[in-house]
Image (cartoon, rainbow, N blue to C red; front, side, top):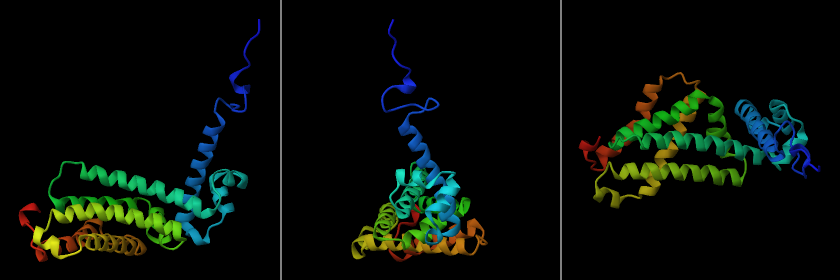
Length: 222
């Protein structure tokens, strides 16, 4: 009686150890991202090489080019993965049920700062290298800043009077606040996280409280 060949030898999608080729490639790609996180996060992108990333990932260089054309393309993959994790944590704060705008701002800032302190490699990638690699990386990091700016804008509108909101450019204001938060976080990281987290959170929140006072906010919403 004729039998079908084993699944591991059927067609071009040959299984090795029960794993399909595309899954093995996905696993290798994940290893490269993990290795690049270590190399970029400790040495910085501009001091890193493909060979160093492959050594950290325990893969040969031919597997690098299986998934990425350039080192900057791999950097984008690392950045996007970090951005998604941070956004997920931030959205959990906004979905917590808390309605007070200032309290939400404070909680989201704490999440951001904890995310960087928890793994300083993230800070090197997101706060330092992402600002100076190439136009594509700048575009993606700028898009991330605008996404957070939109969240801040929504909260600022809940903090200030409608009249005040009409008298200023809320888009510029919210983007500027995000830029300030990034600058403070980068400085905190460069100082080795010496300042206690609670103090840094209060420092980051202070400009929002100042806006609340200057732009006619409803203090009852604090």
